[in-house]
Length: 116
Length: 112
Image (cartoon, rainbow over all chains, first blue to last red; front, top):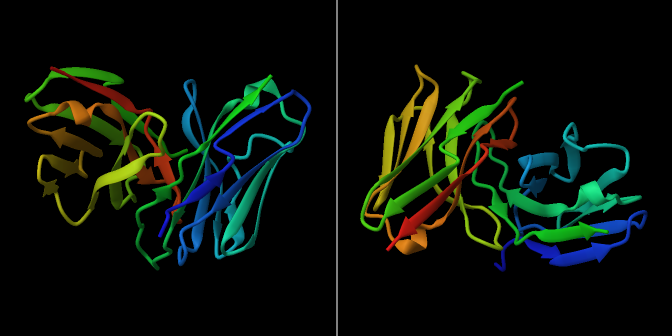
């Protein structure tokens, strides 16, 4: 397996524009996570899905952020409109879902977003 | 809410020395304690984990110890090598479910 695949790797956009980040989880994994990494706040969980259903979106900073998982092999994180403070590295991770036990999360390479 | 404190934030050691990173957590119900390594330009990668039914786990030069009474767990790297230089994160499952809360990270530098 190629691992978790994220695109694009880098994104530079102007303030106010819509940004869409994409993720393909590892085949067979049914948990998917979106994290944001900044120097100030570290690694923050934004939202996660189990079996394509959003379970916890309490980490989504505001209504400008939205995430979808239309099927088991694809998820998007959208920011509309984008602001300079959204600049960060966004990671997608996936893991198998085991009843009653936590499992390893596999991370993608990340998308470095710069909003100017 | 649930949180985890990680120390130190930076650590510099000579090649061949040992390195120890410690995390303290608040949720006594936690039962899974992984450690991740993040190299420059890459996503975090699991290097070792421990479950609450054991106190120590070792994998070659890496070990993790768990003290559930004191609510802390530590990463030990022995015979450090330059390729061990990276940022290390502890994590634990916060609030149930399958999600992980990460510590603030430790920048480890192994000097020749």
